[in-house]
Amino acid sequence: MESNIYDSRTEIDDDVLVFEDNTDAIQLEEGTAWKIMIVDDDPEVHQATTLALKNFTFEGKTLNFIFAHSGKEAKQLIESHPDTAFILLDVVMETNDAGLEVVKYIREELKNQFVRIILRTGQPGEAPEESVILNYDINDYQLKVELTRQKLVTIAIATLRSYRDLLVLEDNRKKLTELNAVLEQQKATLTQMLDKLQQTELQLVQREKMGAIGNMVAGVAHEINNPIGFISGNLQPAVDYIHDLFELLDLYQHKFPNAGPEIEEEIAAIDLEYLREDLPKLISSMGTGIQRIRNITTSLLTFSRADCDRKVPFNIHSGIDSTILILKHRLKENKNRPEIKVVKDYGDLPDVECFPGQINQVFMNLLANAIDAFELGIGDWGLATGDWNWDPNQIFKEFLPQSPIPNHQSPIPTIRISTELNPPKTSVLIRIQDNGVGMSEEVKQKLFESLFTTKPVGKGTGLGLAIARQIVVEKHQGTLEVYSELGHGSEFLITIPVKGEFI
Ligand SMILES: Nc1ncnc2c1ncn2[C@@H]1O[C@H](COP(=O)(O)OP(=O)(O)OP(=O)(O)O)[C@@H](O)[C@H]1O
Ligand SMILES: [Mg+2]
Image (tube, rainbow, N blue to C red; front, side, top):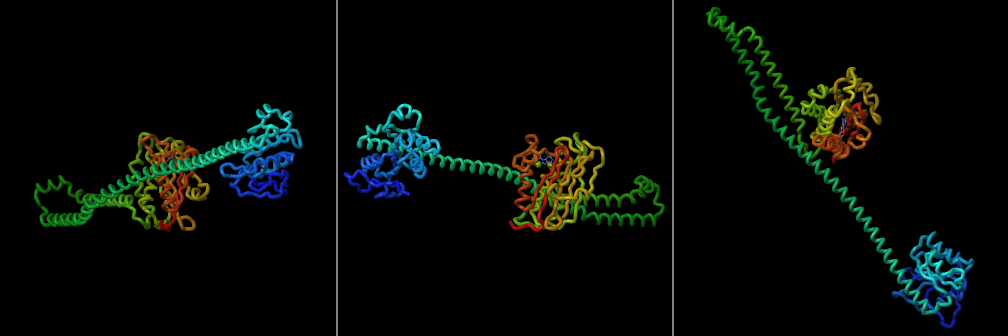
């Protein structure tokens, strides 16, 4: 294809007004010259213009001419040279309004608002100045006859100046847009960081609180254990002493069968026979009581176990049991509901390598939520009259993805906790189910979000499940899922790998 580009720095002879488009034409490197386009069907106009501007420079840059001889050619060239600074555009070429069509094409089709367009017409009758300047997005209108060399130079300077300003403006606009995008991005990052900070702070506070409660509980349990130790340690000697005393009494009675009325009366008054029978029972029930206190303190100590920095083998059932013990007072009957029944269906589980304190915190949050679910409204427990009908085969028929919510209908508010080893035996599965108020789809979507709560102010912080999820999923590489229907109870399903990965 014929080259249409000509560099004004190329030496041309002043006397020679005719030159070949493709001779002496060189393509300039981008950025070293202003691209200008001459569009005219008269080759003489091309020559005259080139000649007039041959030594022209603006801001140290020369001109790089692009020649088009028809409207059609102009359209093609401007498309491949969108960085053209200005066009000197003839109006009447292959058609009477070929130049005006080019204007439309540039502005409306190519959406090029930068290139400056100077109409140069030889027949103003075809394109009257006022209507053209009004209806076409051009930047100047000149009559060919009036175009002297000096006029052309003036126009070129003025036009390049405004083109340059436009470029600067555009450049600034781009920079501003980029800056704005960066700022928006930074703002988003900051907002995210702030959110995360707030959550972390709340979680830290919550953890701190749990830690403090744990320490206190452990301290109290330990303090109770000492005196319990004295009592239980002394119980057997006390039984032995009593036994000895009774033997001595027998011996007395045997040696002195007639001890006199005073002693006989006293024997009758204290009902010695009954006392002999009852005292061992009494001591034994004291022993049972002490054993119970022992179990409680052991549970308390289990629950409040401080975690070390690595995972340790832990009996999940002891964790659940100790958590239930801590929450026992909340299971009691109140004015809104009968006592909550806790049904345990424990499978055969190996110890799980985990952070016991954290896992207990998960049980604590899930069980506390289940208890709350009976306060939040009437669920299945309040609707039915039948018995609590658990059929383990039915319940465990299927696991994921759709956990079957069993028949919860029971007049008794009930929490059911079941555990089992997942079939490949690599993780344990713990289900905590309640027949409480259940959850709507909307609540289910959000319940693991930090600070999401439906509980009254002061009651819920909305952190329980967010923390539980973090502990199960992030710290233990397990899963935590929920199944629930509004009015029909909820089920939380936890899986924890038996072998804890080092994190
Ligand atoms: N077993 C459940 N039954 C019904 N709704 C539940 C149950 N568990 C959780 N939810 C819903 O999920 C929400 C979020 O629970 P989450 O434990 O994260 O926060 P919370 O209990 O409201 O407050 P916090 O635990 O911090 O004191 C609850 O407000 C409640 O609406
Ligand atoms: Mg909660």
